[in-house]
Length: 198
Figure 1 (tube, rainbow, N blue to C red):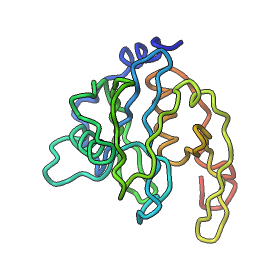
Figure 2: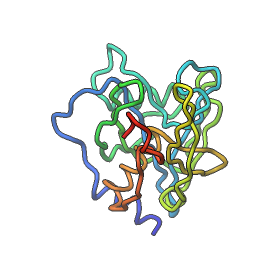
Figure 3: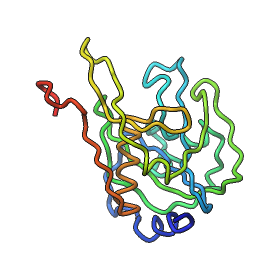
């Protein structure tokens, strides 16, 4: 595996025709190298939403944004200084819903491993790269979240001293499935017997 992973992604992914506009978009940027890596960020602990969580660069649609691709590239540039011209777009993944109900479109692109990135300090505490193979093979570990004074356990993967869970993890699982024909079991909750949560 290796360069074969990025080749497989290019063969299997494409852009959905007549896609509905999402309320937000993220960029799943993957390095073109023997052991491809995924660009991830850890959100600033000062943010109101998802503070300190691992996520892809991305954010909400602005009124002047014409497509989900524009949203993803603009947000990635604002958060990490990634030049949109340094991204080779290869496709998208099915729209996902964030826990606040917002629709989010993942856009997938390839970047050079030498790309120079700078975290936007008010939004991002850390930029890091996680090996695609490591993410695919990472064991599913319960991640405890307090929700309405109840402890819930979401599936997570641990890479590069970070915990990847929630929407970001679900998008990665979708990438493995759609782009790499690799099925990773990923329940919504690990304790879904709790009433009202399925």
